Length: 372
Image (cartoon, rainbow, N blue to C red; front, side, top):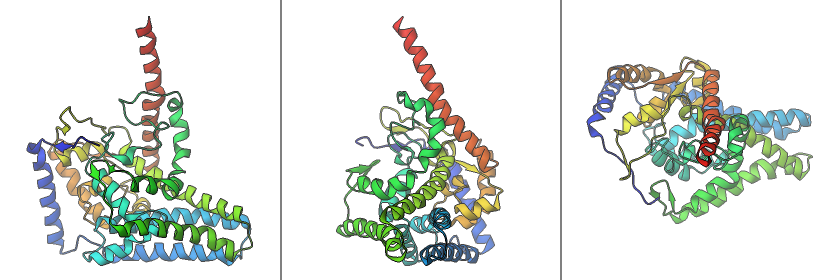
């Protein structure tokens, strides 16, 4: 990416300055840390115990093959929950004030098959800066050629059906991540606007922890259970399908729903808006009143608060969301949220259909008129 992007409308930055001041005041008046509290640590212990207990139960061989396969799917969901609730905060540096604690917990990302070093670049640096900007935010580049999210991209024949197959395709997200995505991104020259020059240690980390992941979830089951190699591979596939479906849906519902923008920079590479205002137009919450969603998704159902305050632990999002919502209203900025998980799914479906089938039909009619 040769063109560097800038957010140039600094006159609008008063919204974020006001919001940040109010959030800082909240923590000061409450006398609490912006990092993990006892509830956050309880969640962490719960998810880790649940994950390793499921893994050991599968290896015990006490259950039928179908039961073990079902438990493997649940294990995949818990892998996603560990990523949401623990790793995500740790890599952002919001879990603890102690950087060593954050780094240690971020290593759990290797356990679920992902690379924390690359995630920090592609997500923390690039996605959080250039949210929903086509060609710059690689987080919205889901299966190029199959999923169309850029209105300026020509619609191909298969994309007219994307509202039908996209949800199934999301199930491949984790498999792609563990088998392909990290390798491809590591050897790119750039991720977004960020030039890549890796420390030598990261070459070792990439390959060592990938092989370790494959061994833990394919090799160990073959050694510990009376199963064939292909049965172990099927289990690995089911694990990552479950993990991918959970991950894919959650990330898409935060940025690809009705109302969210996909802004295009001007010819000079400038986004004519303040960064925080841009976040309010490209990000959405879902199921904000659901205690279950908050517990399972690590605050990712409150993406607005997360994008504005990534250094604040997600356990505090329900309270600071009241501040953000009120301040957005005062500054006449959108605060997008779907009341439930299902309503967000429906909204995402409509966006896929609009950018796929409806855009294809419009493109075809325009082509017919031009040819006459």
